[in-house]
Length: 196
Image (cartoon, rainbow, N blue to C red; front, side, top):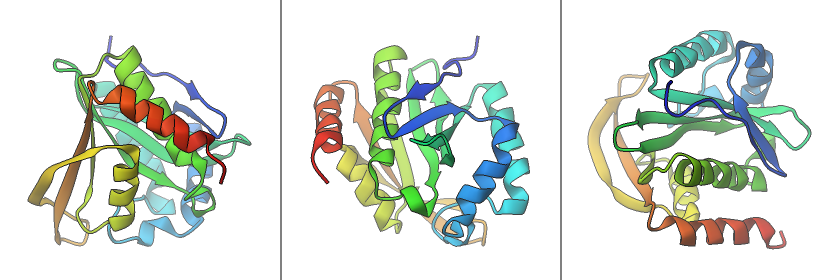
């Protein structure tokens, strides 16, 4: 059996369900909210490429290297995607990445709760020794969000990847270790409970 197995994670502000082809229309609508595919520092599929991207992700899931989720908001509407990726079953490590949300849910409790659910599952159900986060070095919004989770910067992979436009991407690598998880969990729960 592939590790980790597909699972649904439910919260108050969001539910994470295994990605499926029937989510295509909802994901297209979510990506259109903010025209997210036009952001140069991230890679959200354009509407006409969403179906192919879903098939690519499902293929990577079948090979055991990815576990993609569709993010639903509190009303059950599709709000975006997130993923366990670069899965290392031998050493029990995953990366949480390929995350994007419709503009309407950005800077709401949804992202914090999604990360809390994914981290809780990774450390407490899957027994991970560490969970990683990666983003473009210049994606300051994403880097600040990762740091607010309590992740520590491991370093910058310089000239790490080619972007779709051919430019080279420097990748900022962050992680949370199993030893750090209890404090991070407490911090994320506090963030969700404090008045807004």
